Length: 335
Image (tube, rainbow, N blue to C red):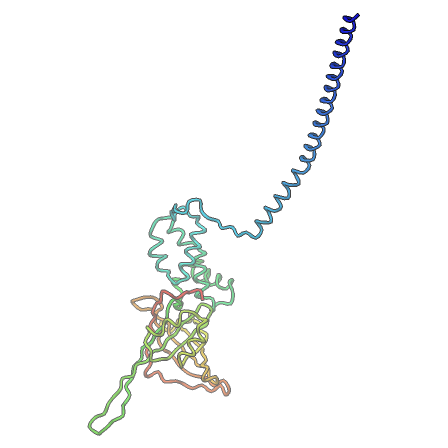
């Protein structure tokens, strides 16, 4: 009897343990299911938020670039490039900047002699077209007239036109040095002093047809630097007297005449701010010398016209000398 009872108890305890184990297994399964569902939910939420976060980051990055100044720098700044590797268009642009300083001699006798490629580039028509426009702009009314003149008189060769056709020099100053004797004040009858007076005339011509003239006793070293820019005219007028602003033009006389020098004339009309009633007219022969072409202005006529009465008054040229051109490296033709 007691043994049966003991067996029943042991069997009952085993059943209870088995039941508890089954309940625990069910609980673990439920927890695992819940955990997996939570992970799926979190992953779903994260997959939805990640594109939004990335998009906001991209917007912020783009906005930060809007006000950023980027400098284009070479990958290897120390590495040098040979000029022959530059595109022809870029070399021509460099040559145009060179000739605008008035240094055409370096183009012809320097750059063009290096190699065949540079020789051909120095003959590019756009370079000589730019030069002709600068030097002959005020002698023609428009671009078509300039081209027509080149075709008719110079065989459609702009370089030939620049070399043959008379032109004034724009890369420097025309200077005339004049002297005359003036009796001085005698302290007694035994001494009669005589003063040698030296003065200078300066003419600076610009590519737009304007010009400035100056009469002064100051030497070129003290005056030439003030003619470097057209915008400084007011500054010069305050510093010097006998300062005039005017316009110039070149007249090519193709009529048959025995005097060849009279075929090319430069005419200047200028006004003095201290004498507003008068217009001063200066007429010169444009000549060449052994030093260079078109570097001499010989006097023909000098007179003034009364703007109110149109009266013409001839001015004496007794003490006046011819003008000779002086090149100034700091001057720019493109003014």
